[in-house]
Structure formats: structure tokens, C-alpha cells
Amino acid sequence: MTLASPSRVTIEPIVRTALLEDLGLAGDLTSASVIPDDHQTTLSIVSRQAGTIAGLDAAELAFSLIDPCIKFERHIRDGHRVRPGDVIATVSGLARGVLTAERTALNFLGHLSGIATVTASLVEAIDGSNASIACTRKTTPGLRALEKYAVRAGGGVNHRFALHDAVLIKDNHVAIAGGIVEAIRRAKAGVGHMVKIEVEVDTLDQLRQAMEEGVDAVLLDNMTYAQLHEAVAMIDGRAISEASGRVTLATVAEIAATGVDLISVGWTTHSAPTLDIGLDMIAS
Image 1 (cartoon, rainbow, N blue to C red):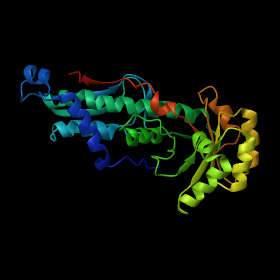
Image 2: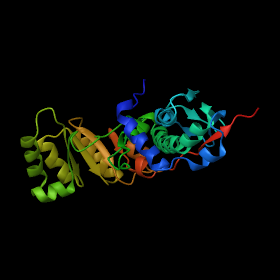
Image 3: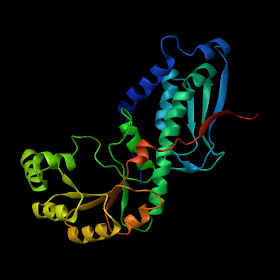
Image 4: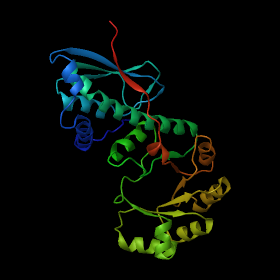
């Protein structure tokens, strides 16, 4: 399966903003004062931990925006699993530019690879089930497109990207509307036939009401394993079933075993630890 990366049009403003944050008004004072302006170098981007790689486009773009002449040679693709010591890419060019872009490139690569790595661990834990691991909108402001891409690199799938993608009726919507039935009816009256409607339910009685009204998907929030089993039976393939809440590596397999279609996890994007990746001199 081909892994579709966000387009350059999408990610260039993100990477450019990160570089501007690092360069400030004076630029890279250290490299400019220590490194001769004509010095050439070749360095390796090396994984120091086992994990799954994501973010090579963003890393390469960080170098090319500083100096278009820098050569970025990939040795693996996004989605590839690495071991400590594996060379991910080789960077060659004027040393000042390489060192100026280094931290921004590694920030993107380490952060996105961390997301891909924890996602891959969840995907592996439910191998053999029919469920998929989905992300949420709990993303770093400004980085959603890249973080959701990293989830795909780890073998997960994307939930909605933004508020305009679909209708997701949550508990506060239900409370303000006066109940699940009224909220669903208002949503159906307010959006076109192409827009999917999902509703969050906390109880089996709420689920019954939602199924009687007819929705495209149901978010089963913080239900027990027994409740999830019963909910899947009630839905009986008439809507997509999505489990959320208290999902960990220790619980995800049992959640998947209930028969749900999706398991949504917020911490893959908001709390994934950075994968340790460095830029090292090539030994001569």
C-alpha cells in the first residue's frame, strides 16, 4: 500500500515557520562564527532507538529551505521500522546550512516517528482482529496534517481532520440540544446528504435511540468490555462502531476482541514520546 504524504504546499508553511522560530532576526550565530562559509560536510541521520519512521519529507524540506543545494539521500521510507544504529538518511552540502537546519529537521522527524512508533505498537497488539486504530483531533496546533500522516505511517487510520469533515455529536451537543434524538434530527436537517453523522453514546439506552434514528457511526465512549460486546450486537453492522476511552497497550486487544470497527486513541498524537534520532558525522 502506498503511503500518501501531505503535499509540499501543505507542509512548507509549517516547516518554514519552525525554521523562522529557530533563526530569529540574527540567524545561526554559532555556525556563522565557527564554520567556514565554504566548508562541505556529509552527515548521517541515525536512529538511536527502535521504532517506525515518519516525517522524512518535513526533514528534507527543512534542509532545502535553508540551502536548496543540500543533498538529502533517503535510505529508508516512511513507515519503515528501524533498529538502533540504522542510517535513515545522508545529508551532504555546505556545513553551515546543514547545521542550521539540523534541529528543526530532527524535531519533525523525531516527533512524527514517535507518533508512528506508538501507533504501530497498538496496531501490532490488535493484529488478527477486524478493528483499526484511529487518531483524533487531539493534535498539536498547526501540526495536525503531519501528525495524522504519522499515524498512517504507523499503520493506523485517520478520523476526521477538522470540524468541517463530518458531524460528530458529543455529550455537550446532546445536553444542549435536549437529547440524542433531537440532536440527530437537527443534524440531519442541517447538513447535506453527503455529510456523515456520528453520535457519541455513553449507555446502551442512548445507543438504542441513536440506532432508531439512523446514523452512520456510533462512538461508544468509556464502555466496559461487556457493554461493547452488547453494543456491537445491537448495531449489527448497520453503522460503524467506534470504541474510545481508556485505550492502552494493555487494554486494546480486549477492546478489539469485542468486534468494534474502530478504536480511537488521542494519546498517539498528544503524548507520544519522541523517537531518539541524531545527526552524526560519518566515520572516515
